[in-house]
Amino acid sequence: MKKLMKFASMAMVGLFALAPIMHVDAMTKFTSDDWNNEDGTYGSFTKVDDNITNLKGNATDTKGQYYGPYSKSSTDTLEDGTITEEVNVELDPEGWAQAEYFTLAVALNDDADKYVVENGIWSQKDGDAIYVYSSWDPENKIKVTEKGVYTFQYTYTKDADANKVYFDFNLKLWDEVIGGFYNVDMDEEVLHMSGDTQKPVADHAFDIRYVWFDNITVADGINVYTNLPEKPVDPEVPVTSVEPETPAEEVKNEENPETSDGIVLFLGLTVVGFVGTALAYRRLHN
Image 1: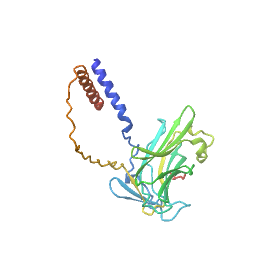
Image 2: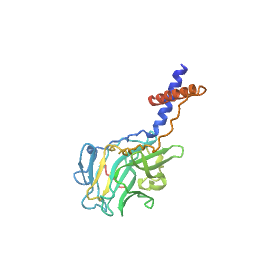
Image 3: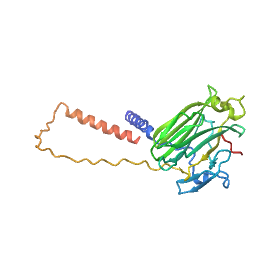
């Protein structure tokens, strides 16, 4: 029994060690079928393949915006205390023209299924980079210089004790967080948009109203990925062995009777431990 408990403990240690590198899927996997443009009212979308959909904004602006497609496929709610949505978007600093941009917004409904609030994140080309920033703090920018498929992660958290809802944003490139905006107090920053300033945000039973590319000016559109492409692996650097000019003096490998048994035991336990570990805002109307 003790051996079984010891093995289980090692397995749990292994799981906790691996946890930070495990990829957690988003609640919604956005496919080409999830986007809606209402016959051109909200830009256009084209299925490139089973994993990629190209989205474009309207050719002419509407109220100062080049509306792009939206999705209402999310089923996330704040009943469990947290809502997280992720959208995988290709950013290409070299491929965009100067000042081209898009905005990706996530909006929430209240318990009466009415629009409450929206958080918009901008991505705009300037010089040799694309800068990602929020609509409420445009001076705080994340600089992107490398082409890749980036994950736009939106998280809403309800703090019942404080009667607050907080918003966090992460921009990720595979497992690496490039930057973000955190602990945005929804009461203070954006509650006025809900039209119900007498009711604290935390009292609303939130769910996702839409995920919307409400502004796209990138001429070639933007590619949205259902799943992240495989992370590239750095090629193995070849190692060339160099023969010494003078043969090294042969060293006898003599066994030390006082330590050899201890070394073998240590190595055996290390292997067993390793094996045990390894097993183990704009509003879209109705």
